[in-house]
Length: 411
Image (cartoon, rainbow, N blue to C red; front, side, top):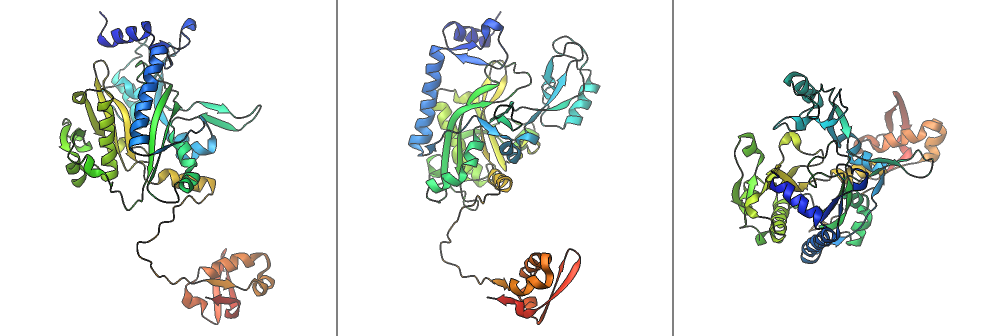
């Protein structure tokens, strides 16, 4: 007898909500098309999300490309870190996420999972055959940009990177002031190993995302009082380690006790809670789970997932809310060579004495020829007391250079 999930999926297909893509060719796991009613429902949900985040919260929306060049994902860490453990059956060739073959296995290393596969006696879920070695598998779809080109590109696995690479222009749009927020709704692509959870885990899906840029030393939210007394079911990392359940607590208490890192993160957890309930989800089947230290993303200082309880799949992630720190901006600045910084004025002017060292290259050049620029750079790094001596000594590439103090002017 079909369970509730199968009944709902059957109704969704018959009434024009969801259809398996390429169905006349047998379909392909992880791809679904929206029928007439499904498309209308999806657009209505997107409009409702925009109403909350764009109209009520006042964030502006942008639209960036679906394909990104390799440099973008090298800088962001996706080339190295956006991976899952994969294992392939030696008999039938079916591929599986290795960590999903076990209950409660989360974010352990590839060698540890490989050892677990080999020692536990687990076999292929499809044919019962022997499983091979566990390997790392990158989830991004790759492509090439231009005909016959060797320039590699990738379908974006998230909408966020297009926002970060436009940081310089966005900052100018917002008048060079923090905080400011940017939203984007669009397609993302993840080449999942074995998407066997219907529409929960897809290879092509729509994301609605907000990136909020705040001063790193000021993470208070001006509207925090709006939700400060809201009681939200939270499952902190410590509760998970102890095997305890989620507990309802006031948002204010969670922030003050350091369970949620700061007010900005807390406000957006509460805003997400408000959105999900207003969208029609049962609050009794919602919770916010904090990522454990070993599963925290490489860019995150703190991260919480909004999770919903389902009949077939248990608790599933709906939304991720993270303090990404300045990881992405720093990474793209380093990779691109651009200075992605915000100038923040002090509340009160501060006076600071700056030593400006000027080297007379017309005198230094004839002395040291091609090494003169290196010598000049080394001189500029010396402390003021060294620069005021009659003879100045510096070391460059293991050699000592001595110059007359007259070639240097300290302002």
